[in-house]
Amino acid sequence: MVHEVPDQAGGGASPGGAEPGEQAALFPDASLPDELVGYRGAAACQIAGITYRQLDYWARTGLVAPSIRTAHGSGSQRLYSFKDILVLKVVKRLLDTGVSLQNIRVAVDHLRRRGVADLARITLFSDGTTVYECTSPEEVVDLLQGGQGVFGIAVSGAMREISGTIHEFPAERADGGAIELVPEDELSRHRRARRIG
Image (cartoon, rainbow, N blue to C red; front, side, top):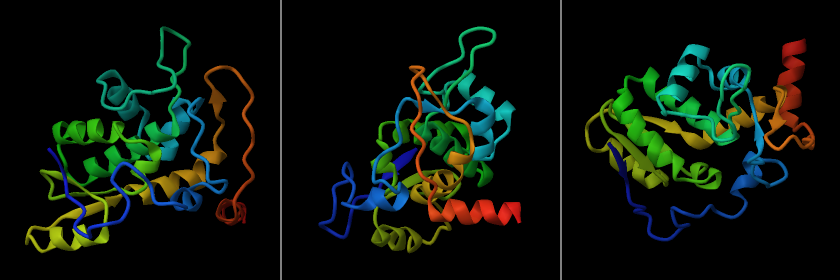
């Protein structure tokens, strides 16, 4: 079960809108990922840190299906969007902390209704049974005062991790068009330099 924890700070942005400049921190050119650009299953697995077996099972059962292109028969390739990969990463983290697949499905349904800009503001908390959505630091304090231990998954943190590595994988457009190459940001350059040595 997902509980939305109300904004107790009073003021601030509404849950449906992002703070000005928020996306600039996640995406260098302040634009959202192109909804037609997708990543094949193998790349989605590596980016999200899951196995191909998990990816296939979650797609077949509808937990996280590719939103750009589904597999239709032999030889066709699924294409996962940035948001799909983000949700895959969140599902993996929830599973790793012991949340049941049934409760994860409810949380995923809730996340699907949000845009990428909205997801950047969300932190998910769980006591292992219930998943809570928080959108301000004040809410985190209130949850912890309840006495039961909870853990948090900052969706924006997962977005930053994906943004830092996703450009290393080949992408393709569902409409067959060319993909504009985004200049590599400083963090990605440092990561690549560290790996190369």
